Amino acid sequence: MLLSACMALGLAVLQPLVVLDMEKCLAGVGDDTVLKYDTLKFVASLQGLVNRDEPRLLIRFLGGAGPNGPINVDDYWLARMQESWLKGRTVERIASIEPLFARFPEALTGVVLWDEDVPATANVATTICGVKGWLPLRAGGELYRRIVESGPKLPVKMSLVGRFDGSETGSRKCDAYRWAQREFLDKGLCNDALMAYYIDGYSQEPGTPGFHYPDLANAGLANADYYIARKAFFFDLSPWNDEAPVDDPQQKVGTDCATLRGLLASIYKQNGGKKMTTVGGFVPWNLKYTNVGPAGSKHEPVPAEWTYAAILSSYNAIMDADALGLVCLANASAYRHFPLKKHYKQNPRPEKRPIEAKTYVLVYMGDYDSAAWLSGAIPNVWDDPARGTMPIAWAFNPNLSDRVPYVFDYIYETKTPNDWFIAGDSGAGYLNPNLLIGKRLDSGLPDALGLWTRHNTAYFKRFDYSITGFAINGFHGNMPLRVQEAYAKFSPDGVGMQLGFAKPIVGDTPFVRHVSDIYPDLNNLDKAAAEMAHFAKPTKPQFLIYRMILQKASTLVAVRDRLDAKYPDQQWDFCDPYTFFDLYRRALAGAATRG
Image 1 (cartoon, rainbow, N blue to C red):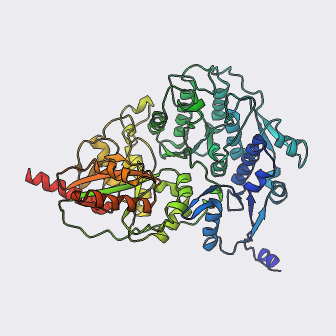
Image 2: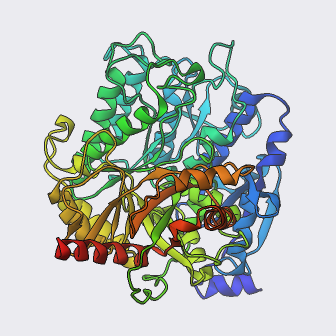
C-alpha cells in the first residue's frame, strides 16, 4: 500500500541497496584467477552504470586494518553511511552475480569484448562501457561462456578482437588507444576533465604461460566504477620516451609516451583549457615501466612517477594517485553522491605565541594525494585512540572530496582540537607547479597558473584550508617567484616545499623546505627519533618540517616522547601548522630587522 501510494503521489521510491559480497562470490568460482579477474571487472563496471544517478549496488571486497586488527574497509564505510545518509535504507545482501541480471536491467544491455592478445583493449572496452553502457568482457573466457554463450545470453554489441594490428603506429597497443581517442575522446563523448590510468589486461605474472591475476586489489579493477559512472577515458601507457615498454617491446621507442601526450592534448582541447583534468591511478611500477621485478625498464620507480607527473602537469592535469599498496577503492560510484555541505570549518586559528629558543617541528602526515589511500587508511589512522593528544597536520588533498566526499564529512564531524587539515601534494591535486608556466615540456599549451589558482581557491574555501604542506616539482627545479605569488593567493598561511624557492616570504606567506622523510620502524622508534634529531642544530629558534607517510598519532606521540627524553637540549616543540608557519614568518621578519 505504501509503495502504491508513493507512486500515485509521484514520490521517488528507493529500491533496496544491493550489497554483493565479492569475497564470497570470488571464493565460489574456485582457483581460476582469470575468472575472478573477469568477474570483478564485470561487477565493478556494472556498478558504474547502475550507480550513475544514485547508490544502488555496493560490493564487499576490500580488507584492511583498524586500530584493533583486521577489518573489512567496505563494511566500515557502509556502517558509517547507515548512521546518517543511508539511515533506514533497506539492504539486500547477495553472494553471486546471478541475481544481478534480474535486479538491474543495465546488466542485460550487452557486452563489448576485449582481446587478450591486445591487453590494452581491456581499458578501451572499459571506456566504451562508460560511453555506450556495454559491459566489458574478455572474449572466449569462462565468464564469456557463462553469460554470453549460456545463462542470460547477453548480446555482443561490439568486439575488439583482431581489430588492432599495429598498422597505424607499429603498436597494436597504441593503435587501440588512438582509435578510442578518435571515436570517443575527440568526439566529446567522454568526460572533458576526468581520465583513468589503471593497468590494462596485462597478466600479473609475466613470463608464465597464459594469464594470471593473483592480486586483484592492486589491479585497480574495483576502482573503475567511479570512472565509468563519469564517462572517463581509461589508459595504461609508459611515460618514457627513451625505451619500449615491457608489455609492447616491439614498438618504436617513445610510441607509448607520444600516445599519452596525444590523449592529454585531446582532453585539453575538449575542455578548452578552462578546467584542470583529474587523472585517477598511477604508474603500475611493480609490473611495467620501471626496473622493479619483471617490469622490464632501466628506470627506477620514483623517476617514473616524477616523469609521469611532469607530463600531466604540462597538460593541466593533476593526479589522484592510487599507487601500489592501497590502490583499491570500491563503491565510489555510489558514495560520490554523499551530500557534502557547501562549507566546512576547521578549528579556530590558534592564538599567537611568543618566539622562544626552541626547535619547532611540523610533521606533515601524508601522503593523501589519492582517494583510495585516504579512504583505505582512515579506519586505522583516524580511529587511532591517540589521535587528539598532540597537534597533527593531516595532509588530506581537498580535491579528493570529488571521489570520497564521505571521508571529508566524517573527519570534520569527528576532528579534535588538535586535528588540523592542510593540502598535500601539491595543493588541490598532485602536479609540478613549475610546469604550469614556460615551455611546459613543449606541450604547446599557454600558461595555466591562473587556472591552477582558481582551482585551488575553490577547494580551499570549501574546506577552510589555507596551508599547502608539500609542493612537489620533481625534476623541475626551485619554485620561481611568479609561482610563489600564485600560491600566496590561495595558501596564504604557509607552503611546505620539496625543493627550494626564490624568496622565503612572499607578501605574508612563508615558504619552508622539508628537511627529511621519516619512515618509522615500529620495532625501533629510537631510530626514527635519532634520524629526526640529526637535523636539529644548536642555533635556536629553528624550524623543521618532517614528512611521514600513513602513520598513526600513536606512533608520532611515541617518537616525540623519545625525542624529549633522549635529546632534551633541543627543546622540541611539535606545533600545529598555523603556529609553526606563523612563528617561522615572525622569526624571519625579526632576523631581517636585526640584519
